Length: 386
Image (cartoon, rainbow, N blue to C red; front, side):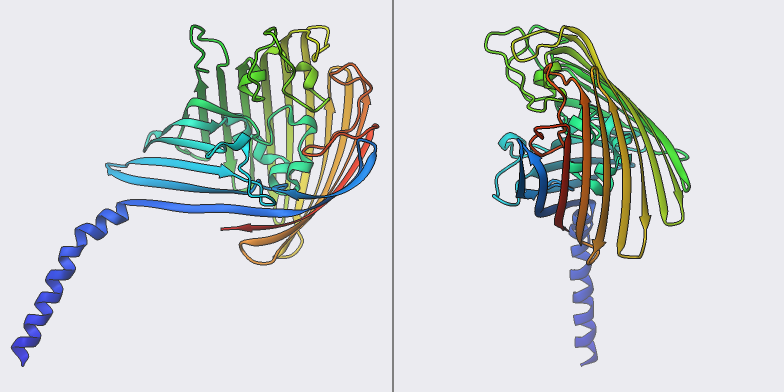
């Protein structure tokens, strides 16, 4: 009887040991499914001259699902990939013009010396400085800078891009991205270059970024024709900057700083956006040359309780011939670690002459423009992360 037990124990041990290589192989590779689903309502006092109450989806974080994977190659090297798709939670439609993985699609190699990835990717300026904006922290799309002309909301992504991300050393890190554009016979056409860097400590930090892209009508705003080609119209609908989309070059410089004091966080951002060599067309009547935007944001948040976060932000944008002033006020209540309810109010006021040569009107991001210089929006949303 004792010998039979011994034989059984040896057999179990052999089976267990034979499974170890397979178990180790599985442990060396992993794929994670993740995502966000968000939906809600927004009230606006003036859209094309009338008040509106409408459904809004992805107003804080665009609804999305993605796959993130890694494989251990040994010696500190790993293969990494990310596939992420945006969608409209109200209708189920794909976002980003119907692209299957329109948010990002990249593959690369990670090592102790940094990570190199290639594919459709975000650019470093928004990754370092944009994360300090109230829009990406608690205010969402409606709280973005007027027109999001400085890409602080990370709306611009680049195909065919190659990016290097350094490892963090004593709180310092940087990224650099290059996208050749892919236009046959022209190295410069539609190409983009972006760099970003930051230093963070327990009490706060600083960050900066630079983005330069050619032919933004196509490379940034999704148009299919270049300015000057037959049938060209501005691919931008916002009057804040639609008249400048025919620029040959778009350049953005951004700097930011943040500080933490117990339950309080304070962030400051300054950006300079330059539309260079603007071509005058039927839909872009700007006189030509360079048009620029200078934007500053100061925002703060307070963790009132373990479940309740409150925030306030002031944004001022000086455009070429217009001025935009905006206040964001919000609160976010966590029902659990993955589910929260957000309430955000935004007021924007415009003065001067907009990019189309008309009297400037308020235009809160993600909404239809007001018929006058003021616009107020109040948004209530439910968000779940998985």
